[in-house]
Length: 473
Image (cartoon, rainbow, N blue to C red; front, side, top):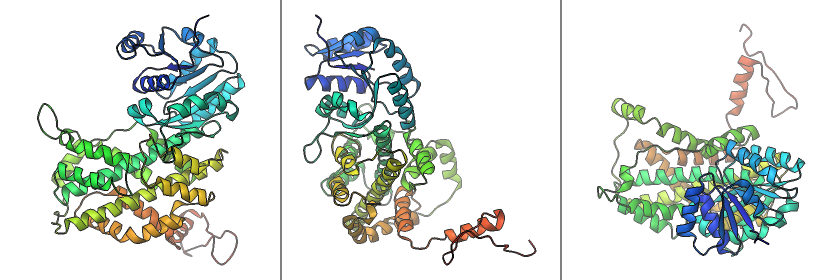
């Protein structure tokens, strides 16, 4: 009898390869399929000698090599490619087999696929996987959504290949039914967008206001990375800023075109936050910044025609760096507050019953957004599972009280020097709007009633009212 393999992987790109080698290193034999069979076979011959990773020429052969119930991880681009692979697989599967989509699929598509496959007798999971190439190979953060009754079939292999949280527990967890895993990954990506925006603005301010060299900015991020903001993004930024181009000898960062691209997940979160009626200031801001960065020719023309202030010299450079650190810290707190506010609202809307404490825990290792104060966030939700907004937690409330003066100072400096700081400003606008007892929305509603007869509510009476604002209008 031929040996049966533990895990099947369809799609042998960077992530698929990394996960295959990760599974194999943890004792789970793998059979893989990719449409580019020759390239996959060559890779295994050169990199996988002596490892229990088999390549299959066809989908049918992959299915036949697997133990029952089959566990097949699909690692192809989100969208039609996922549906195409599922259609190819189904004729060779049996009821009770388990399919897992490890790509960045839109959570509503995952909900639809899970329902359709459940009705046919199959189990379908959406896996949010964060960590990139290194995470896939050495340990990722894995957000699992799907039928709980089948979690037992995949729990052992997934927790085995996951990164480790601060308490050494695996960063792989069942979060809820159908699209829960992919939704949490979507929020993760939105937080990633916002954090990248903040880090880039800090870099911009250090470069323009302090006139720091790349080496000096790298040193600042290295120093910051040893404090409360210890994070993966600081570590990679420190490395990026020191890297030199082999051909020219120049710093590579200075040769990269200032146009930031995206794959759509940021847009999804902006759309979903609008659907849920949940404010997500920094997520939308980060998306819009990438949009405006793409108008390179227009910006170059505007640079010659539009005027702004000259940059003022800063004498107290250490004071500025400290203030910028506080601005980053405060803004990152607001970014995570927006993310968890969205998760709480979505959990209620889609009946997922998300345990936010668990979400925080599996973001502590492997993933792109891991940061030192995640443990404080976990403790906040452990202490109060019903916490409506992270800004209301005692620890973060006191933290923001102490550092917000410097936060505001940095935004004033950026504005007075004509340097865009939409990430820092959006975070502060979120904080100030959330703490404002009476917003000017009363005037907006009165205006809406004036021109559109939309009505308004009063603070002293119940019901809905309309006023004929101008007798002769």
